Image (cartoon, rainbow, N blue to C red; front, side, top):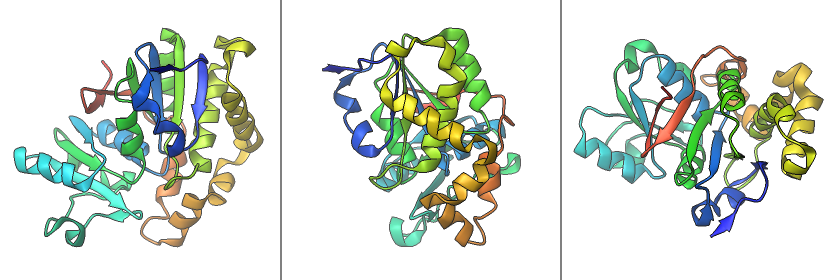
Length: 255
C-alpha cells in the first residue's frame, strides 16, 4: 500500500480521494470537508441531538438500512435536492441535505442514514484511517482545537468536491484549518497542497461570503429560493462546539 508521505496534506477532488482505500492510513487522521453541505448538515444534526449518522455512498444502501432498522431516518440529495420517490421506488426521504432541516424536534435521539453526491463518498473513502473527523465552518474551531491538542503524526484534509471536480468552498475551509494549525508543522512537513489551500483562504478570509458566492455550489444555492439561506448557516464560524468522528461506519460526537 502507498503511504501518505506528508505530515500535512490537502486533497482537493474525488480523483484524489478515490485512491485512499488503497493507501495505508493506519497512522493518519483524516478530516473531511463538504461545506455545501453534507459535513455542515452532519454537524448540525449532531449539535441538535441526533444520536448518530450513517454515511453511505448509494441510495440503495440507505434503503437497506431502513429495511433492517425501521426507526432510522433517511437524509440525502441528488443534484442538490432531497431524494424522492422517483429515485427510490416509492420512499420519500425524511430530509434533504439542508443543515436547516435538522432541527432538535426532528432529530433528537434519532439515527440518520445519509447519502450525498460527494460528502458521504469522501467519508467512506477514508474509513480505514486511524481516525476520521467531520469538519465545517460552524465547528472548525472545535476540530482545530482538538487537532492542536492531539497533534496527529499525519494529517490529511479531504475536500469532497463537486461531481468529479474540486470545490472552492471546501478548499477555503481546508485552508482555514491549515492556517489554524500552521505553527505545528515545519515547512518541510507541509505539502504544497496545504500551502495552496492556506493561501487561497488567506486571500478571501476577510469576505468568505463573497468568495462562496463565486463558487459553483454557492451560485447554485443562491439561485434556489428554498436553499439560498443555507449559505449563511454554512458560513457561520465557530457556532458549534462539537467534534464529530466516524467510527465503524457511524458518525457521532467524539467523547
